[in-house]
Image (cartoon, rainbow, N blue to C red):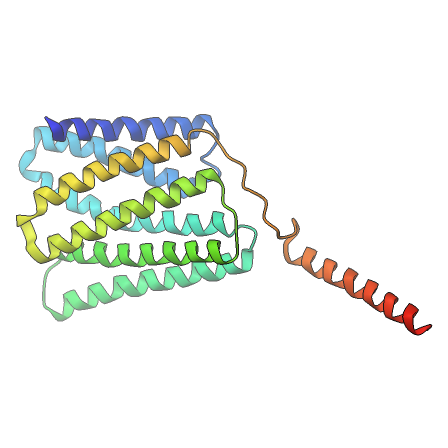
Length: 250
């Protein structure tokens, strides 16, 4: 009964989040995030049907869909970087390319390990891939958070909600996957409950903080970016030259 309640609560919150995002015109601002929520929403309904009418197939279907979610989650991290660094397009582009490279290297390493071990792709390989990818994602979010703090880059309430919620989800997900990788089916039931309740909490955070659009807080950077910095610098240099010439009587 508890599992059914958590399941249905997740579907309701995902639907509410998608509906409110559409009504508040948030889809254009966070297209990858809402695509991720839409994907999980459809998967939740599909898994409910499979679990109700085809229980023996549930585990295989779940891990097949979880494999897809790994790549969808990478899109959420890329979007957080894109929106958070939108006033710094050069840094955003460099970070995006670096993240894509690390993602592909992580996938390649897992695939190579599977081939060298002469293993067919299995549930444990999916767990290993997801755990490694989640490690990369949370490291990327922590790095971005350090940049925000060090350079006093302000972020909107909506982006804070996405960042906090997804970071919490990643942390619990990594813990559960590590335990499952080490102990296997012995902890699978407990890990599933912990992750489910955490995800419900995260959905609640997203629903509250994304319920209404928030303006991106203006930073100290000029509105026109690097060109503005260049023009301001040239202006100050011009004033300095005029002052020096006046002082020297030139």
